[in-house]
Length: 152
Image (cartoon, rainbow, N blue to C red):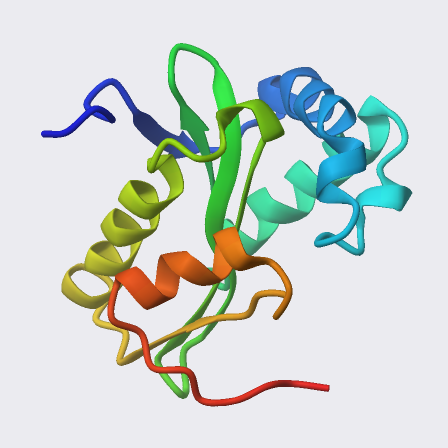
């Protein structure tokens, strides 16, 4: 494996609330441009609610949120929605600012896509990203995704 061999990906859990909030709060200025929900996440309680919704979506087989660990939580990746009738998974991801630029997310999204096709038997993966977010755009491009257009 590459430099990301110490990475761990696991299901998000309520016990992660404080660390995830801390990561959001420390990266707030940087992430604000790309994540519209960020300004509504102003205290740990907001993160707890997000995690509860994520757990419920997993239980209903409609989503899957994972924490990315590199000795501590460094970001989130997952399926914001799984559309089973169309066998499509909608991927979302973000990393704390200090962890960006090291290939972590490329490695993690590649693993998630492999899991989606091989284990979950999805037919399509949809990654929606801000057009101006060049770092985020690079991930699907490097993984061979086809740009199907822009949503307005």
